[in-house]
Structure formats: C-alpha cells, structure tokens
Amino acid sequence: MKKKYNPWLLPPCLRKIRFYCKAIIIPICCFQLIRTLFVPTTGDFLLLIVLIGLCVAFHKDFI
Image (tube, rainbow, N blue to C red; front, side, top):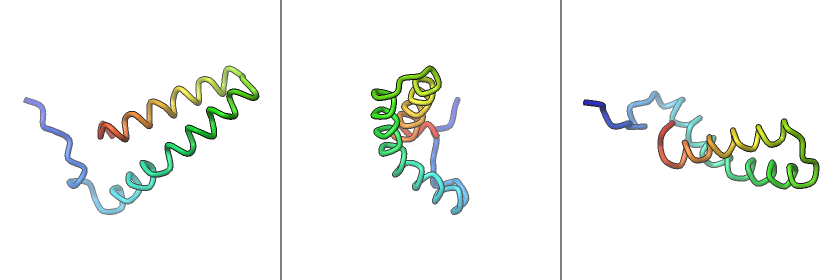
C-alpha cells in the first residue's frame, strides 16, 4: 500500500524551498503567459506548459 505524501517529513530547508516555490510559481506563470501572448515561440509554449504542470503539482501537493 502506498504511503500518503507528507511534506512535514521533509528537512526544514527543503520545506522552506517548497514554500517559496509554491508562493512564486503563480506570478511566474502569469508573466510567461503574457510573454507567450506577445511573442509566441515554441520554447515559450513548452516553458508555459512545464510551469503550469509545476503549478498544479505544487498546489495539489504532488511535490
């Protein structure tokens, strides 16, 4: 049986990094979306998809 993920089992330094990444990922996604709308390139689309995936992972506690 798989254990449920518990972020409090991480070392304190990793918990801080996770907290700050979770707090800053939404503004970075918004900035990348605006940049992609003005200058659409393949790299911008791929970066936006990765950032949205990270955002979902952070807010659903997968990471």
